[in-house]
Every structure is written in structure tokens, then in C-alpha cells.
Image 1: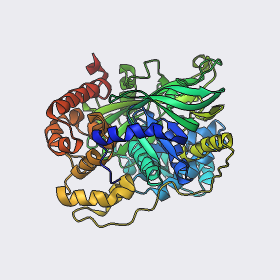
Image 2: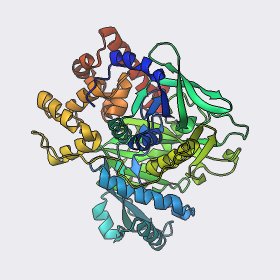
Image 3: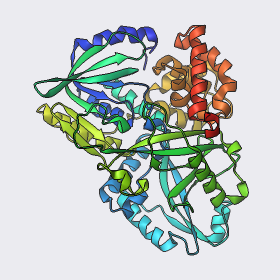
Length: 531
């Protein structure tokens, strides 16, 4: 993206939004909305995406970072969901190396405990058949102790390994949006839809307000796609009762040295029999996730509770007793809210983990709302939404199997290793040449112990529509999670690099810094620090 996305550009762009009738307006800047925009743009639709806060602000920056087929959905009989997921996982691994990467998972087996090697191996045989390739293998106890030093030993029968994938979910959203923009789409953050406009019983546009200031505007469109995740019911007139069940999943991030794992571990929590994970990510170790009804205000960032902290620490103690992981070892936390579709009164109908992850479309004339869904299957979900919108316009849309991501031309950047080049190409795609220029100007140093280059910070500040400091440190980069105390010790150096690129004066920077540190303390530290 060559345009500088600063405040001045924003004020120049906004008045022109109402000057045309859009073929499609997408509400929601997470992976679902980004996917819809990308599929519309590739087909030549005049399309606009509106995000009320920041791209990937909600669930799409707070997921478990897994691009997986949903192994447990097989056991629930959700064959189509599993089939679509494993196929899309393979597609993303092929199209976005460096952003979506394969990860080996290990499931240990213990005498008398579920699942046993035979049952789990049978499940994985089906999983592999759906993916079209065999990846699972059984390791006996002696092999497993070598593969996983420190794993709980009493009763250990061995373990089964299989392949899935991990990603940086927020960077995945940014990359999909960049592909949509390259095909002519427009995506803007900080614009809240306050109401839908209707004429003759049909949705014909939206009224928006700018979070950064300015008068409300009315925008017109031929079709509207609502992809706001857990907020999907906000703009929808319904008399069918509540159909979304917001479920919270919380995670711990530990320094890699504190609980070093070379691959992901999946095991059943002794407390409730739910699967939990411990896996390496961005040089650190993630422990997750919980699954419980989220009854807090959706307009506030979700936060881990003391109960969830205790649950995840207990998982560490159960599977890696010698590590003796404690709350004081935690670098940061994050909690996301899953938009699970359920019938009215579903909270009384079973455990959160048993709720389906299938998505549904709610339709009214001129408007399609996507409810539910998974990160892995964002592409087929987007095409389904677009097909519904097209039908309202007398058009047709088919799934032609086109790639989500354009191939990234190989580029040699002096000072960077092959692994670093792969990482940058995956996260930035078409913008890799501009990253190369910044590396040439700023050097190839990383920020602290992270894998993030100072040049990536500079690029985000210049070109990725950063409205607030948390956009830069929690989503464009993940430094606020990966460095101690939300990267507080690095803020002076970050200021020197980024303040002039953002165009903020001293008072604005100071206000943003205080806002960010307060937000981090409230939503990304330990729950004891919340009070």
C-alpha cells in the first residue's frame, strides 16, 4: 500500500464515501468481513468495509491462533465442517507460507484415560482421509519422553502426533484486506454504523459516525453484509429471541524459556475433560483455552478471570509438573469471545464446549448477516454470503477456487535470514518491497527478544491505518503481548521511531501511551491487577 494512512488522508477520504452508491458495504473488520470484501473485490464489485474500532479488534486478534480442521467436530458428527476446515487449512498452508505454518501436535495417552491410542488413531484416520494425506503417527512412552521432556510420566502409554497449523490471526486479517484493496476495495476503521437505512422494506444503506470526529454520514448500497461476530444481533431486527451465545476463551502467554515446547500439546483437562493446548508461538508459549459463557459487556475488551487463570495454570501443572509454572511467570493474557449460534435459552442446554461451531446466514431484503463461523473457513463462508447478496441483485457468484492471496515474489533483503524473509513475506505479502526499503534504512534488528523488526513497526505506523497505540502494539505487531509489561520499557524507542510517522504531536502521544498502558493492565495482565 503506497498511500500514507494518516489523519489528514482520512479526513480527505471520508467525505467521498457518500458520493456513490456501493455495490456492497461490509460491516465488520475481522476475518469474516475481510474475507467477504476480498471475494467481492476480486469479482469487480464496488465495495467498502466499515469497522467501528480497529481491524481484527474483536475475536480475530484474540483467537487460539490455530488454523485447524476441528478434530473434535468429527466426534460430534459435523462432517461438513471438518471437511471444509481441513481443505481450507491445506489451501492456506500452500498460499500463505510464513503466515500460516504447519505445526505438529501431540496427544499423550495414559492408562485408563480417554482418549486411548486406538480410539484417537481411528479418529485421526478419518481426519487424514478428509485432508487427503496421512500425518498421524503413534509414539511409545520412551519415544514420547524424548520428544517431550518433562511430560507427566506416571501411567504414560505413549502419544499420537498429527499435523495442523498456526497463524498470527490479526496479520491474517491485514493480509486479506491488503488483497482486497489491491483489487479496488476500500476498508476503513474507526467508523461505526449507527443504524441501517431502509426504503420500501429493503435495506438500502447505513448511517455512520466517525470515532475520530466529524459529522454523521449516510452511505447507500445495493447490498449489505453484516459480519460483526459476537455483535451480529446489534443491527438485526429480530423477534425470535437471542440466537447468539457469546463464549469466552482465555489464554496465557509464557516466555518460551519458562515452558519450552517444540510442538503443540493437546490433552484433556483433569477438571472437566475438555481439550486444552500448550504450543509455541512467536518465540513464546501459549496455554489455552477456556470455554465459558461470556456475560460481560461486549463493547469492552474481554479479560481473563481468576477462575480461568487457575484453570490454565492447573493444566500446566497437570501435564508439565516439573516446570512448576506460576502466575508470576505469565507475560500477558488475552481473551476472545466466540460468536456461537444457539437457540434461545441455549445457556441452559448444555456445556459451552458442546455448542455447535456451524455458521448460519440471517437474511432480509438487501441485507445478509453472517452469524457464527470459524477462522479457518473464512473463504467458503465469504462466498456463501456473497452468493446470498448476489441473488438479491440479480447476479450470480460461484466458487471458482481462486486463490485468496497473490503469490509473493521472492526478494533478497540483506541482513535477514531465510526464516525472517519467509515470515515477512507471509505477514506483508505485496508490501514486501516496501518492507525491504525500511529494513535498508533502519537495519535488521528485532525489538527486544521478539521476532518483530523495528522496520515492521515503522511500516505499520506509515501504511496500516493505525488510529491508536494499541492498534500498533496489539494487532499490527504483537509486541504488547510478547514483551514484558506490554512493552513498556520499549515505549521511548517506539515513540522516537513511530511518532513522526503517525503525525501525532507530543500531547497526543502522551495521551495514547497512557490509554494503552491502562488498557493493557485491564485486559492483558493478570486478573489480580484488574482491581
